[in-house]
Amino acid sequence: RHNGAQKDAGAGGILSDPSSCAAMVEFMDEVRAQLDRDYGIDQDQVILSGLSMGGWGVNFYGFLEAAKDRYQAYAILAAGPRTDAGIDLGVAAGKRVLLLNGELDQNLAVANQGKPALEAAGAIVEQVILPGEGHVPSIASMTKPLADWLGLLRADLDRRRPAGAVAWLPLRLDDGEPEDRSPEALARFLAARPAVEKGREGRPALLFGVSAGKDRKDRPSRSASSSTKAEEELFCQPASGEIALAARSFACFRFELTGREKKAHPFLHEDSAPLVVLLDARGEFLAKLDGSRLRSKDLAAALRGQLDEEGNQAIDEKMTAHEPLLRELREIEKKRDRVLVSLDKMRAARKPPVTRIEKLETELAALEARRAELLADLAR
Image (cartoon, rainbow, N blue to C red; front, side, top):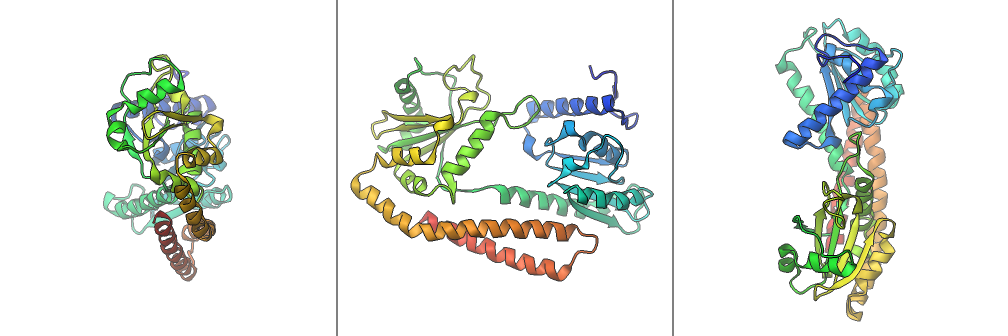
């Protein structure tokens, strides 16, 4: 099944020939898929890590083109970066890599020699050398540096999340389908969901269908990527603009289409995401926007079409007041990204410039505080 390679899943040693590397990438994909089926995991937040022999495996099974974009980060423990033929350190570009060795570890020399090549390839490298520890460091000595590094990954994830501008109500679809495939039938089907009937309270409704599906290589599917892009451009600040203001007059529902197969659900299936359905105050069909038609101008016009002259005038006034705030928010986010990149590089340096790091940390705290103030002002 795996071309005869690594039948013991690598327990017998690290094999670095091309067929073994390809087989192990395939095998680990199967393990991840099984874990997802059994327990449910966030496939976008998987880290490849190994200690000693496993650390060499990170090189041979992680730093190769076939494994590109499969991992959020890499932790090489009691080993080091390799530059053997077939290894492509560029796969780690823009990713965090932890190098952790004991001070007395014979593999520390490889870690020291490989670190510059890994940095030159664009990785964000942090090296930890544990005083007095040997090849396999004690768990107690590794606990804090590992926790600190994982904390950096969590902070990265939090920073990447755009600021939502719409207060979503959850909507869970049952196994039913509209009786036909007309937009009117879709509106009736969605309006009849108990959560929508209860949550609308006589208001028009905005319903946003998304996917978080994966393709065969465990990467976000086309529908998932389009859903993320649509959410960021339509319903998150600073891009949302007048949509966020108009949506305050709507009951807003977000529902998942992940896992709904087209054969069983020919109308509302995973590949139909992203889509937006608008209902009027009576729960009747207004508009259905999906795929390439999910443009902010079209959605803003559709939302504002349900508001009276007074409501639209209020939005115009708010937009005039919000425009300077949105401009400043965009500038702050650009500055924040630049500071974060600089901090990552400085913290990962062999001799971190403490004074410069402290200065940037102070600047980052000020930017974060101002960002929070702007988002609060925009939400009022």
